[in-house]
Image (cartoon, rainbow, N blue to C red; front, side):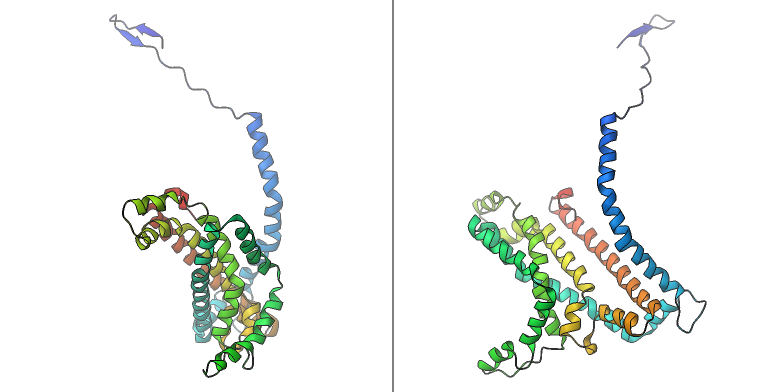
Length: 312
């Protein structure tokens, strides 16, 4: 640093030259342009197959009316004034929540097993999970329809042990059973991606400090697996909210979910305004719920010291 003297003869530091504006290299610009070109096809596909249809349906919510012309909120008023629609919406969220919890209870011990078995067993078990996704969902649902009917295999096993027959076909429990079969792989895969990266030396350290297996699980392993739990649960929950095939094949109109009600409005009643209102309410409720769960999960992860690594 250069120095100069003032009028009194004191030594002062020379003023620093103004900082030059940073220039972005041509290489960095080229990388940005390349990344934008790589993302462009996905954006175009999403715009055509997702954003445009969703925007069209939302627009019809405020433009297509039945009996009340000129009221942009008529379809939303119809939805909230119909107790049947509120009941269907609540049933949809309840069913999706139950399916998510059951899938988590089934998938968690199985996924933990995947992290401790040998590579040969890992390939075999993961192959079974992936192969279940390759089967046609229609075939699986009609198979469950055969299993769940009154003279099906499940009731045959129930009566063999001396219990009365259970009516499952056309009921909400039957829908939940079939949906859990379809959704469990979507819970296993995100969980495995998280559990396989947990450092098992932390469990050994916890044991060496005197913690028992139960304390080690709840104080160490479970908090570390929370990102995988939330990712898998949210994925299954959101997919279950809009699930149509299984409730339509296994369920009945008496316990229909909102996806069946939307199809009935569009295909049978040709009322796109009411269908759009139902879809808009479902979308809004889902976004609010996901945002709330993500916020609570981040706060929980910050408390256990995982920080940004646990972001959803």
